[in-house]
Length: 113
Image 1 (tube, rainbow, N blue to C red):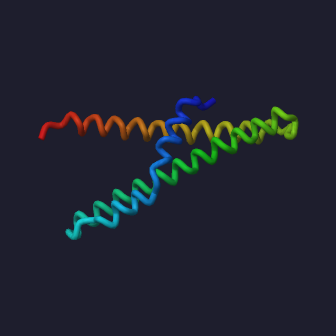
Image 2: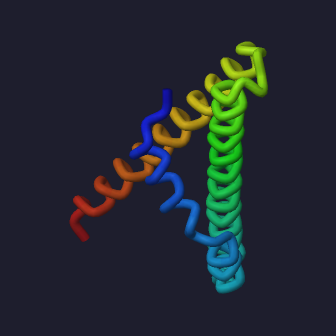
Image 3: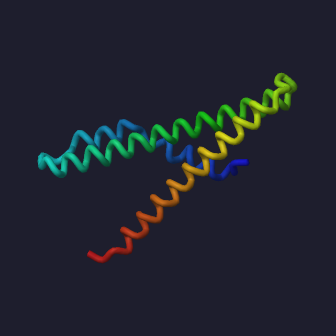
């Protein structure tokens, strides 16, 4: 079962708007190689934000299925189990990506210029 603290971290990350990502892409350098790399990076950030939205959707679906089941509106535990597994897997993936990003950031901060 997903941990509440992990869900809170996801909502904090979700507050970064995709508009900010597009703004970075608009200020891309004129050098074609740098422009290519910037667009690639902005695409990566946009995809990451979309994945956060999907993860939040799975978590919401799981909560809805749990509420339906606990209120007796649904007697099908199969749908509940699937919703829980989807949310758990998506959350684990998102947390793993977050951990790798933090690890890369720390490594960059330790580099000497």
